[in-house]
Structure formats: C-alpha cells, structure tokens
Length: 145
Image 1 (cartoon, rainbow, N blue to C red):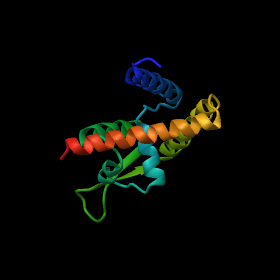
Image 2 (spheres, helix red, strand yellow):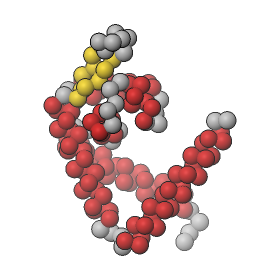
Image 3 (cartoon, rainbow, N blue to C red):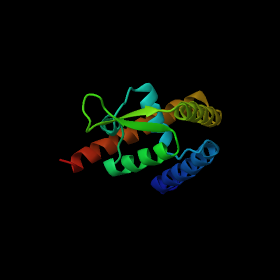
Image 4 (cartoon, rainbow, N blue to C red):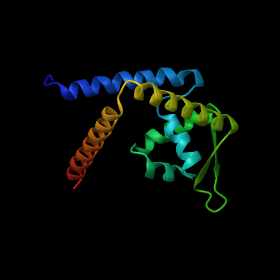
C-alpha cells in the first residue's frame, strides 16, 4: 500500500459525497438536508436546539439550512405555544416525501457499495471506520480541553 492513505481516504470521501449529491439532486435535496429530515422524523427533534445537539455543525450553518428548507416547502417553523422565543420545526407533506426519498437513496447506496465487498471486507471496513472515528474524537477532545 502506498504511503498516501489519508489522501486516498479524502479522495474517496469527496467522490462519494459528490455521488450522493447527484443521487439527491432529482429530489431537490442538498447533501446535508437528509440528516435534518431524518432527525425530525425519527429522533423527535422539534427545535433548532434539538437538532444542534445531534449534529456537529455551527448554529449559523443550521439556520441557513433550515431557511432554505423552509423556502423550498420542506418544513415550517412556528413559535412554540410554551415559549414564543422558540421556533418549533415541523415537516410538511413535501418534507415527509423528501425524507422517504432520501432514505431510499441511502439504502440504495448502501446496497450498491455493500455488493462490492465480501462479508469479511465489510466487517473489516466497519472496524477501521470505528477506529478512525474513536481516534479523531479523542484528538478533538484533547484539542478542546
């Protein structure tokens, strides 16, 4: 194996990310929106604060994404009946349809990439990804202390 592992990993990520974008484009979705849709549907997130606790992005980034999604008719934000300062987020029918479409895209991509590997390769890759994530989270934790 060449000594450019991290570069190859980055290249693979960029190509896969672009491919994902191409798969989501027919549904009018950007690459970050399916995660928000999924959190709203499956994880009972109802406010921007709820979403921020589950996502690793800046508040301003999420605000912009939610504004675009609202403009595109995927969700509505209304003041909470309990606290008018808080905006509750609800998916529209279009938003629910987009969430289902994005789930199908991710399922199709999982199947497509899984078909390229043996069960042993899948297990190994999963372990490697878990190891990378743990290492990077530990490094990140150390930098924030």
